[in-house]
Image (cartoon, rainbow, N blue to C red; front, side):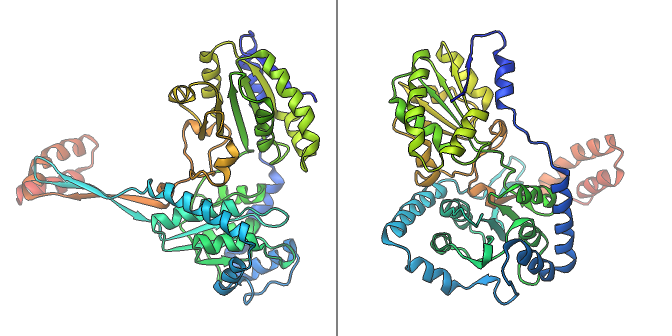
Length: 432
């Protein structure tokens, strides 16, 4: 297998790394046109457009009467899950919820020296839409990761949309939705589902924010409705960066690289090794283990197209590379990994030590697996309870405080030629 290998000390390393990280994210004009037409149709025709697109793309006779999944059906799906599935979902849900509860922000205030009370009121969003991919793939973990933080935040209504090709529902997804506490599940997907959530139809309530992964049509639709509603993020291909000192079992490292590469051909798996010989050991493990996996062809395409090995001579080089990449997932498979983690400034999630594979974070460690990709960890964060809360500034001026602040406000307002602002402030002093 031909996987690109770089040396961090080479003179052309920066350019080679940039080339390795680059991916074709050029917007497809035909996709944009299609999504724009779908959004406009849903805005104008509501359920009629939604049903038409569902029948066209998912190939089943959808109607206003059968779009919504009743709560009894969700409960039944949960009750009929095999014990091992329900137990695993319960363990994961409990851990995700416990972690999320630590993130919940509280309102606060203080009284300044003038007797003014200043603060911030934290309130949950009223209604949130959660997009869950459907079809061949089932992602109950995504259901838990998106719904539970919203529940912890106190969101009043959580509406889940999911495509159902040929009308088929995935029992594991429905069971996870029941366990997470979803309020409404609607059998629609694609750009039309995003449009319905953003603008509302007779069946789909308008929401305040849309979260959850989807294909290029879903991602494009989320871009287009942003501003009308909030969104979580526009995610690129999944990615993992592993930094290893050469002392971890190479089979473990190979399988961790596979864990991201199996998502799709554009996913990216990179190993930074402080031991040049260890790279060859991992290559041997890849050759040995790849044929044992069901998605070996996808993994092979991903590793050959976007995978990479990087030899770094020093810890400082390795950390610099990690911070430059700002990966979605960063594994630190090294001695004293906790100390290394202190020097990482940019990463969606850090997996510390040899016994912390990224896969545990995807399912049941507790922290959210919805993470910033494509270097956006430099300025954004994992999905969390805070994404489902909003903050309102609170200002309560005392009579003395208003009078004391009026001169300052007046001077600044007149400096901006906003006389009414100035007089509004001055009146509080004159009339005080």
